[in-house]
Image 1 (tube, rainbow, N blue to C red):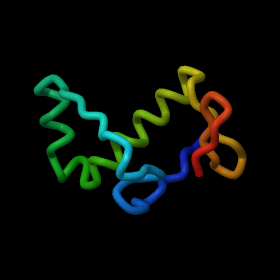
Image 2: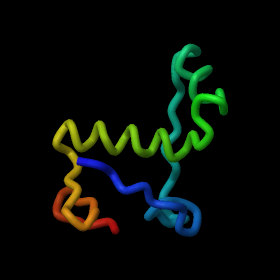
Image 3: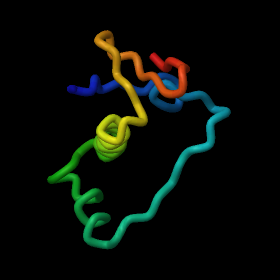
Image 4: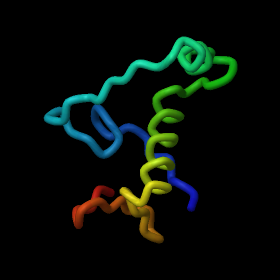
Length: 77
């Protein structure tokens, strides 16, 4: 199922200032690709979409027909 790309609303996509950011480190080979703007010019959106795809594949996140995200009975638009 395709994932709609949401643009920033405030300081994050569907987030608030109260939510702490999740930071991760990657192996150097992955970091080189993610930092190469000739390969990925919008790194944040790319990583967000990759994480969403994996959560959907793992059955942890559901995307409705109108692109609402659902986890544990709560909805994020």
